[in-house]
Structure formats: structure tokens, C-alpha cells
Image (tube, rainbow, N blue to C red; front, side):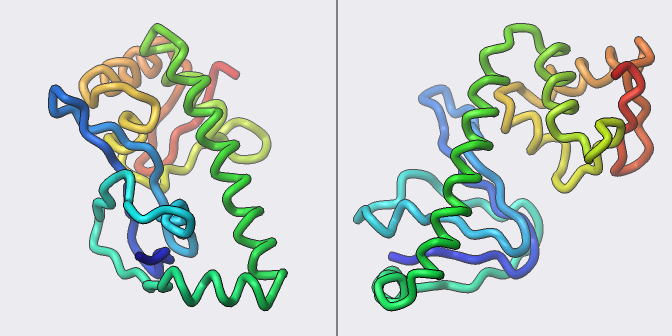
Amino acid sequence: MAVYVIERGRIALVRHTSEGRRVTLFAAGPGESFAEAALFSEVYHCDAVAEVPSRVTIVPKAELRAVMKLRGQVAEQLMARLAHQVQVLRTRLELRSIRGARERVWQSLILAAEPGGRTVRLRSPLKTMAGEIGLTQEAFYRAMAALEAAGHIRRRGRRIDLLGV
């Protein structure tokens, strides 16, 4: 068992429903870690899938726990990272409670906006964003097209400008 730190790339933690639908629980990029729950468990509760070519550092569970006991600062940094992940996951739960796809996508874009609230810079593929908020790719793309047609957003490569804020 180990915790993994991403050097480069993007890793999604996923589960699959009984119908075979992929549900993205979390996606991590460079400098982020995943599988921290393994520190206190004997099994991994989801699959890690590289969305792009990736490189990770493996931190064995026993070594990390030993360092955490000796150096409280390491434990504090890990707790801060996990607290942030809990906040992100709670936000995703809130988004998933929004019934309409268009409104769900719009709210997710508002939450993802940079300071100032007018620009979203995409760090992951749109299909990942769709999975994170509980929509199929098709529903997500239709909602994006509807928001663009209504003049609420303008897409420019990996950037989305929010016009209707």
C-alpha cells in the first residue's frame, strides 16, 4: 500500500456503476497526491486511471506514517491537503444535486473561475469535468453549447470566458 504524488500528468480516481458508467470521484494533477485513504485501510476503494501520460512518485504507507509521527509538519501539510479535498468533494456533491444539466454546468464554471470570476482555464479535458459533476459527456457538451448560444460563455481553446456573470 502506498500514497502517490503526481510529478506530471493527471490521474482520475474512478469507480464504475453496475451499468458500467464511469464515475470520477477525484482528479489530481502535478504536485497533488492520491490514495491517502490507504494510510488507514488495507484496500484501495477505487481505480486510478491516467488521463494523459503521467509520472508518479510512490510513497510507501509505512514510510509516510513513520515520517508523520516524527515530523508533525508533514502530518499538518497532509491534513491541510485532505481538508481541501473534502471541501472540493462537498462542492461536487452540491453541484450534483442541481437537476438541470445547463444550470449544473453553469454553476461548475462559476465555481471554477479564476479570481475576478470571469475566466476559467481548463486544467483537464472537458470529459473529465463532465464526470466530476455527474454528467455524461454528451449532456455536458449540449449544455456547454446551449450556454454559448445564449451568450453566457465564450470558448477560446483551453479558456472559457464567463459573459453572463
